[in-house]
Image (cartoon, rainbow, N blue to C red; front, side, top):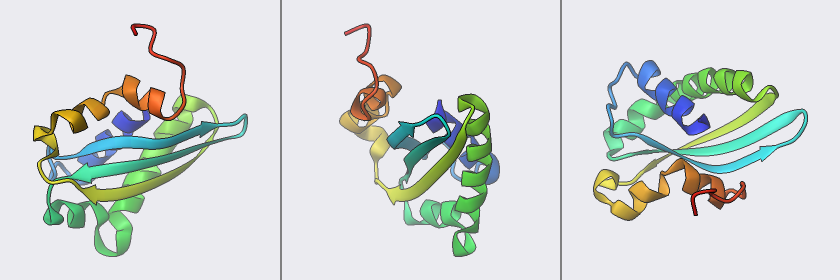
Length: 119
Protein backbone atom coordinates (compact mmCIF):
# COMPACT_ATOMS: atom_id res chain seq x y z
CA UNK A 1 0.00 0.00 0.00
CA UNK A 2 2.84 2.40 0.78
CA UNK A 3 4.30 1.90 -2.70
CA UNK A 4 0.95 2.58 -4.32
CA UNK A 5 0.44 5.74 -2.25
CA UNK A 6 3.86 7.00 -3.29
CA UNK A 7 3.13 6.21 -6.96
CA UNK A 8 -0.25 7.94 -6.70
CA UNK A 9 1.43 11.10 -5.43
CA UNK A 10 4.05 10.92 -8.18
CA UNK A 11 1.28 11.05 -10.75
CA UNK A 12 -0.69 13.73 -8.89
CA UNK A 13 2.29 16.02 -8.24
CA UNK A 14 3.80 15.71 -11.72
CA UNK A 15 0.37 16.14 -13.31
CA UNK A 16 0.93 12.87 -15.14
CA UNK A 17 4.02 14.15 -16.98
CA UNK A 18 5.54 10.76 -16.18
CA UNK A 19 2.61 8.45 -17.00
CA UNK A 20 2.88 4.72 -16.34
CA UNK A 21 6.66 4.85 -16.73
CA UNK A 22 7.05 5.01 -12.96
CA UNK A 23 7.15 2.22 -10.45
CA UNK A 24 7.89 2.18 -6.74
CA UNK A 25 9.79 -0.51 -4.88
CA UNK A 26 9.90 -0.55 -1.07
CA UNK A 27 13.41 -1.43 0.07
CA UNK A 28 12.94 -0.99 3.83
CA UNK A 29 9.84 -1.01 6.04
CA UNK A 30 10.46 -1.05 9.78
CA UNK A 31 7.68 -0.49 12.28
CA UNK A 32 7.97 0.43 15.92
CA UNK A 33 5.26 1.69 18.27
CA UNK A 34 6.09 5.35 17.60
CA UNK A 35 7.80 5.44 14.19
CA UNK A 36 7.66 3.66 10.87
CA UNK A 37 10.76 3.90 8.66
CA UNK A 38 10.30 3.43 4.94
CA UNK A 39 12.90 3.60 2.19
CA UNK A 40 11.53 3.46 -1.34
CA UNK A 41 12.93 3.75 -4.84
CA UNK A 42 10.95 5.42 -7.58
CA UNK A 43 12.00 3.86 -10.89
CA UNK A 44 11.59 5.68 -14.18
CA UNK A 45 12.82 4.90 -17.68
CA UNK A 46 14.62 8.06 -18.86
CA UNK A 47 16.80 10.94 -17.69
CA UNK A 48 14.06 13.44 -18.54
CA UNK A 49 11.59 11.62 -16.30
CA UNK A 50 14.11 11.59 -13.46
CA UNK A 51 14.61 15.34 -13.84
CA UNK A 52 10.84 15.89 -13.61
CA UNK A 53 10.61 13.67 -10.51
CA UNK A 54 13.45 15.45 -8.76
CA UNK A 55 12.43 18.96 -9.77
CA UNK A 56 14.58 22.03 -9.29
CA UNK A 57 16.74 21.52 -6.23
CA UNK A 58 14.80 18.38 -5.30
CA UNK A 59 11.59 20.31 -4.68
CA UNK A 60 9.29 17.95 -6.63
CA UNK A 61 10.63 14.89 -4.80
CA UNK A 62 10.11 16.71 -1.51
CA UNK A 63 6.47 17.51 -2.43
CA UNK A 64 5.85 13.91 -3.45
CA UNK A 65 7.45 12.59 -0.26
CA UNK A 66 5.60 14.95 2.06
CA UNK A 67 2.19 14.20 0.54
CA UNK A 68 2.83 10.44 0.51
CA UNK A 69 4.19 10.49 4.07
CA UNK A 70 1.04 12.18 5.40
CA UNK A 71 -1.19 9.56 3.75
CA UNK A 72 0.99 6.70 4.98
CA UNK A 73 0.90 8.11 8.54
CA UNK A 74 -2.91 7.98 8.41
CA UNK A 75 -2.74 4.40 7.20
CA UNK A 76 -0.22 3.06 9.76
CA UNK A 77 -1.17 5.24 12.72
CA UNK A 78 2.39 6.32 13.58
CA UNK A 79 4.84 8.99 12.51
CA UNK A 80 6.63 8.00 9.31
CA UNK A 81 10.20 8.66 8.22
CA UNK A 82 10.03 8.32 4.43
CA UNK A 83 13.21 8.24 2.40
CA UNK A 84 12.77 8.39 -1.38
CA UNK A 85 15.29 7.74 -4.13
CA UNK A 86 14.84 8.10 -7.90
CA UNK A 87 16.62 5.67 -10.21
CA UNK A 88 16.55 5.10 -13.93
CA UNK A 89 15.89 1.57 -15.16
CA UNK A 90 15.47 1.75 -18.91
CA UNK A 91 12.89 -0.68 -20.25
CA UNK A 92 11.76 -1.90 -16.82
CA UNK A 93 8.25 -2.57 -18.14
CA UNK A 94 9.70 -5.13 -20.58
CA UNK A 95 11.70 -6.96 -17.90
CA UNK A 96 9.67 -9.88 -16.58
CA UNK A 97 11.95 -10.40 -13.58
CA UNK A 98 11.75 -6.73 -12.57
CA UNK A 99 7.96 -6.60 -12.97
CA UNK A 100 7.69 -9.73 -10.80
CA UNK A 101 9.88 -8.02 -8.19
CA UNK A 102 7.26 -5.25 -8.00
CA UNK A 103 4.61 -7.69 -6.74
CA UNK A 104 3.60 -6.56 -3.23
CA UNK A 105 3.76 -10.09 -1.81
CA UNK A 106 7.32 -10.51 -3.03
CA UNK A 107 8.26 -7.10 -1.63
CA UNK A 108 6.77 -8.07 1.72
CA UNK A 109 8.82 -11.26 1.81
CA UNK A 110 12.02 -9.43 0.85
CA UNK A 111 11.69 -6.86 3.63
CA UNK A 112 11.04 -9.55 6.22
CA UNK A 113 7.27 -9.69 6.46
CA UNK A 114 5.15 -12.78 7.03
CA UNK A 115 5.31 -15.50 4.38
CA UNK A 116 2.80 -15.52 1.56
CA UNK A 117 -0.19 -17.68 2.69
CA UNK A 118 -0.70 -18.87 -0.92
CA UNK A 119 2.78 -20.44 -1.13
